[in-house]
Amino acid sequence: MEKNSSFGITHASHPVLLQAVLDTFHSGIHIFNAIRNQSGEIIDFQFVLLGKKSVAFPDRQDLAGRKLLAEYPEYQAQLQQMAQVVNSGSSRSHEVHLTANGNNSWYLVTDSPFGEGLVNVWEDITEQKQAEEKIHELNRTLLINNRELASLNSELKTFNSIAATDYTDTLRKLYTNLEFIISHDARNLTDEGKANVRRAQSAIQKMKLLTEDIVSYSRIHTHDTDLQAVDLIAMLQGIQDDMRRGWPDIEINIACQENMPEIQGYPFLLNLLFHHLIDNAIKFRKENTHPIVEVGCRDYDAASINHPAALPGTRYNRYTFTDQGIGFAQEAAEDIFVIFHRLHQKGMYKGSGIGLAICRKIMDIHGGFITAEGTMGTGAHFHCYFPIP
Image (cartoon, rainbow, N blue to C red; front, side, top):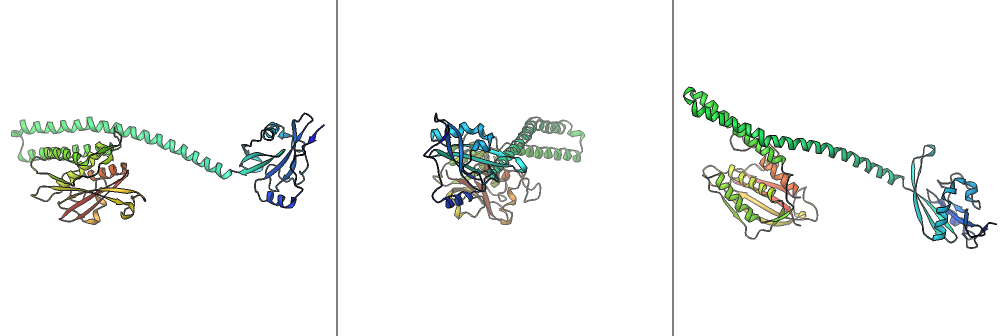
């Protein structure tokens, strides 16, 4: 003989108010009493209350007092789980996907124990599921794009390998062969012929320089070390020594502020960055002068820096490289960082137009940015902003 627990849920008091509360929920709330047999086993559930907007039991307002399995035999498969909630006093949740009658919705169904029954809540999570699906699709697209990027990157590395070895070696052989012609067959060449050979050698040298700079630019993201604390003063001393060997006829002076803070960065890339800034000062020095580069540092708050790359709430160490060279017009301050951009007529100054583009890329990798200030005839200032850890 079946029996209802005397501790079941009722709505004898305030039935209208309780029903009104349930009716406000869009997905549905259902309250059940457990029905037990003589052995105390739960064999069914009895509807006590349910909201009008129930998606689990639509278009049924007459279910109060009726048995769940008698009205919906398909719930036999869930009876054991529902009984476990009542007996254990622990809630359980699971997701339900409804696709009937053109409906495509997801619900989070939660059964919570309440006396000798349970409260069954259906929460619409369709938007959340759709968002998850969009994220999944975006991740899938990103994975495909990453594979394509990896393929392109592999091709670029192959090109770099060829450019750095075979291509450069071919240019060297061309130059050497032309030099052989000048040295051994000069008597058979006219003055115009000799001039043409020299012009060809000059063009080969420029192509070799351009090739090396392109390879250098494409390899910027390849660094074999972790972030390290870099002593800028010691690094600049090494760069100055290298520059003096490369420009033996020029007296190069780098004047550094004392006690400049270390930089958290990649040593190889930072060396390349400062090398280009010093080299830039040498190339664009005034005629018949020796380059002097002054290096100083100050810290700034992002709020005081008028630059879109400055992150709010971040402090920066600004390392400034100041030269006394030919300078540039301030309206060109952004253009000079564009790859292959030239401010001067081709051939006037040595270079490929890649150096400052490399500097900007290296600053991006370090989470900072670089700006420039210039005045025609009086020199230039290059500001490197590094975020303070």
